[in-house]
Amino acid sequence: MIGVLTALTLALPQAGVVPPTAPGRAQAAIGIAESSSGAMVAYGELQRLSCARQRPGSEFPWASVESLLDQLLVDPQGVSSEGQPDAQEWARLLVDLAIGATAAERLDLVRACEGLLSAELSAEQRRPLLGAQVALLEPLVARATTEGRGASLSRRAVELYESVALAVTDAATGEVPQFMRRSRLRLERLRIGAAMPRFVARDTAGNELRSAQLEGEVVVLRFWDPSSPASLAAHRADSELVREFWDAPFDLLGVTRSEDREAYLRMIETARFGGVQLFDGPISSALADALDGGSWGGLGAFGGTSDPGPKQRLLNRWGSPSPGSLFVVDARGRIRGRDLPPGEARALVKTLIAEERTLQRELILEGARTR
Image 1 (cartoon, rainbow, N blue to C red):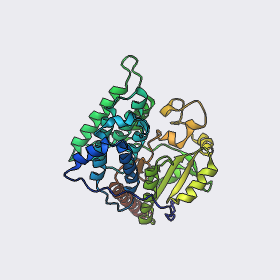
Image 2 (cartoon, helix red, strand yellow):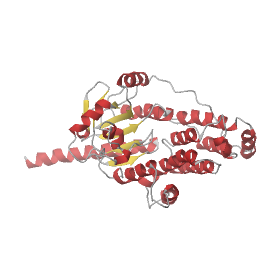
Image 3 (cartoon, rainbow, N blue to C red):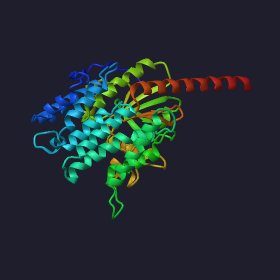
Image 4 (cartoon, helix red, strand yellow):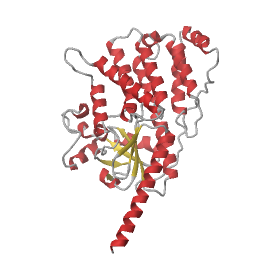
């Protein structure tokens, strides 16, 4: 088993505790929105909450997030006000809040994006918010279901996704922005049941890791980024999986892009993540030449360039997913889940491990019968 457990020593920022929604919430929201710093207050609280929610056993009610979003949307014009968080910052925060969120919670965040887009914004300001909407909806479209309680939410997510796709498509040329092209490709190539992209990378010790070496192991792969505190917090929490499944065919992989290996190693040493950390940088790019055919990193793939370095990055092979994105891969290398709430991700990993152990027992018995 490749995964190894490391201690978690880096403390998360203290989270502001936001009381659950009160009957007078609307009145309070109006009051804070009328303050010149209302948007800034809501932004700061949501930032803290986005990290605090990633802690194992966190019991922060989603109503706290809803209340703060309501406060912001009383006056969405604050997005374009000088001295307030801009559209890019809000887009990044809403995607952070979606890490480990349920389908209903993701749709709440999509509505917040819609509210912010109702402000008078330039095309440049609108772009990151539209990109955030796509990022929020994509996992719901990827795991859309036609059965049970989630069917109506799935239909709604697909409808919203397609409406955003239509809105960002140039009516005259049919051109769409890069974030939309990448999303479409991820939905096509990273669909549930598809084989995960092959890769070659280096871990923190400089050892080479090929995706083929993961056969027979259930894998959780988390993409994180230093600019996304919530993605770091979520990846620290992933270490709980390593603790629980330490004696099982299971691996936890963390991936982030970096151009500076030394700075990356210092950051990893401080963070003390669990599992195996893969350096997605120049060294990994050179190793990608060892892959034979079928490269996702070819010219134009996921917005790749003609530069032989970045086009081969592990992140690009997975379509440059948003920070915090999580994929669950079974022991045969098939993607079985993505961007699930922690409880659902854990349950899926447990099921896949049980499936692999059953298969291995059957193979042993079959071998014994044929001897």
